[in-house]
Image (cartoon, rainbow, N blue to C red; front, side, top):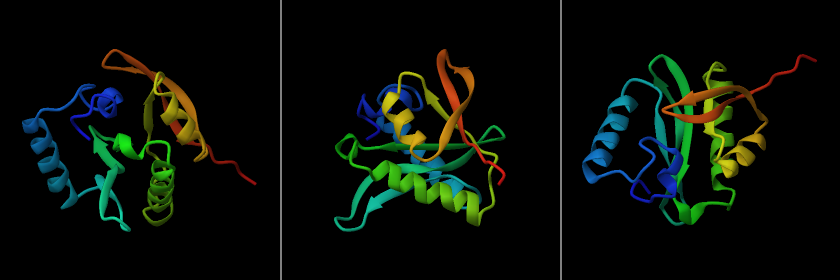
Length: 142
């Protein structure tokens, strides 16, 4: 997954990661799991297969929700299902609503998927020279 150029196109370094970078990333995630929010493996139990990674982590004081899935599992609904369950847990069980989801404007598949979860683009941002939008859930008072 981390060495696939298409998977990494909008993630992290925007290129396939080296083996050392992958090991460092995994070590960081495992360390974060001991004491804070982070991204977690998304596994299809029926076949005991890693589909991808999703979750919330603190990046320089900002709670950032992110997800990335192996290309084999794109466009099959797994990302939407996993993100829906995780976001519900974040908002309901953890009572966290002040998080962001940054999606590059060119990542149209991800934009379509996140809109299905009632997320809306709320702010234009440029990060590392790449233009995108922050997406958040919009709550309406009844």
